[in-house]
Image (cartoon, rainbow, N blue to C red; front, side, top):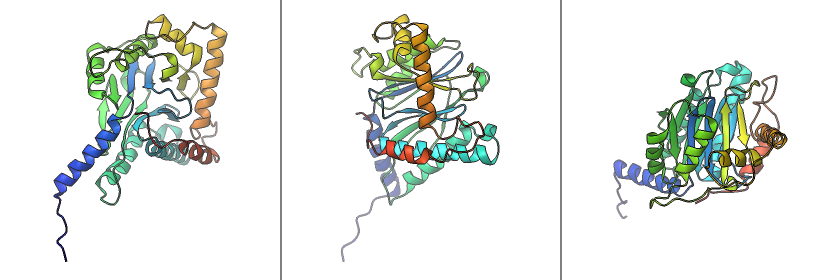
Length: 292
């Protein structure tokens, strides 16, 4: 009988980490920034069906890069965890820290298991507080570790270069338009130093806005409203600016989309939506990998 090929545990873990990092680097980047009224998520994502940024609960949102089917399964699990905890205890007991701990345990178990490949995903979980100093942003790499971030964070693609760019330019007290402009500028920079032009059709933008009067703070910025913000601050070429009625219509559409894709954050009673699982499952079957 032949002797089994031996690989040291250190080498095996290093190989698994390298495999996951290469998969994540193929995805287009996501940037998360704090601004004066909350947290803004900006992703380079031309798809309008396969989201990289999603609502989890009242004040919590989720962003990810990597393989779509893998991070979509994690998103669905996070929605179910939040719904169940909010229904069993209290809605205020659902926190980004608790959700990040759940994700860390899941990713860490998968990464250390020799029976399956590591997940090729990197996650961001953010929660908006009543004041800027109460905002929470957590980055979760493929191995299940948790990094507490402040101000700005980037994942996927050339994240190191983007993070360096953001660290030099991000400041406290930025408006939404200023933060959006900075995020688009950072995403537009290629690894060779050249710059591209990103339009509204190539971006997925959402916010956790602490000033919203309703319980749910998540809002997508779509269509003419996004184009107007980009045009006003010179961050891209998104078309003509919109009037107030068009912006209101885009906001209503964004709210409707957020309620449909999340579990029960919009329910008045706090009970989980019995139909959320089937709709989420059908969405996750539409794609198996992120944009390269």
